[in-house]
Length: 183
Image (tube, rainbow, N blue to C red):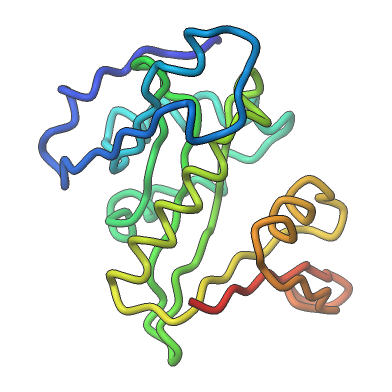
């Protein structure tokens, strides 16, 4: 299944604030059109969530649907975001505020459409989440990944997060890489 056109008008019920970013604010691609068309980040809507649970396994290349648990939309979804490129859903971030202390913006799950990787979608999602976390009074950000997820580790390092390998983080013999960023 390719990118799906979503249309921002369908999502005016739940915190309809949308941010428009121009391609010129991120790495340029080959076409002139790609440098001028808007990329929009906005709150996750129910239609987005339903789409995400249908495509996440393809985007991630394996069974991961369980990670997109409905709690991250219904109960913890106020800070969940999607990115659209010309009305096409090309990325999402499921995150929430953990009360702490310290109050922490936690990034649970991020997905980028395979055709849109390395085009700034992840950076836009993380920048928007960081802004929202600051506005919510968070003093740090946190995310966790598996030890072999080199792409995630490189992304977090490049965007200013500390990277720590923690043995038994997810239980006995289940190490994880923990990312933190002070706001």
